[in-house]
Length: 193
Image 1 (cartoon, rainbow, N blue to C red):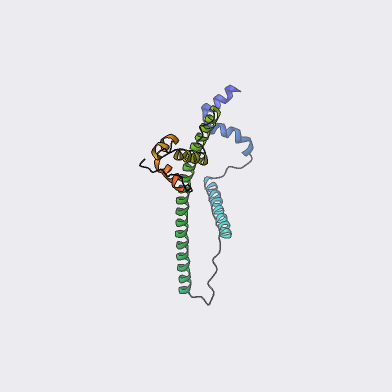
Image 2 (image 1 turned 60 degrees about the vertical axis):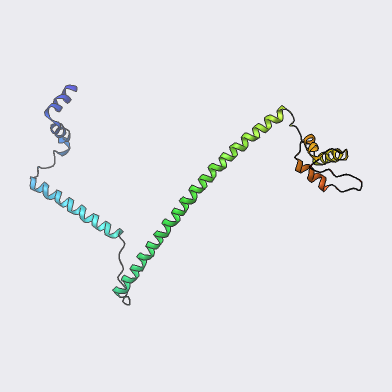
């Protein structure tokens, strides 16, 4: 069998096809080339006719204009429709541009928010770490500090020295002393002392 296939391939590809098809077409009489050409031309003509007929069925048919509408009125309506379509397309472009603009702004805001979140998480992590290391030094409550200022002022110490001892600004000490209820017989220190 292998030798037979090789011999057929050496004879040419058409010889092999003829041998394969010869039993199937042996009963068909040989036709002249003009008849074969005429049959091929008929098949092509029928195919073109069939395709045109099919496309004519699927294509939308134009309705004739009603009697009361003139061609000029129809053209005016068509122009208005084209103008309206152009306006709609322009509006669609503007809306798309606005959406793109807002999308880019939202993207920037989201990136900023992500950065802030990262910083807050970092600060939260460091706060937890410092909380684990021990309590942070607490500043004395305002009332306690005010009482200390009052006690030092009653002892006759100058406002500048009170500020140094209480770790406060001299103006803050003066304000605390100025807001203190003035009691009779109690001396009020001044900043210059």
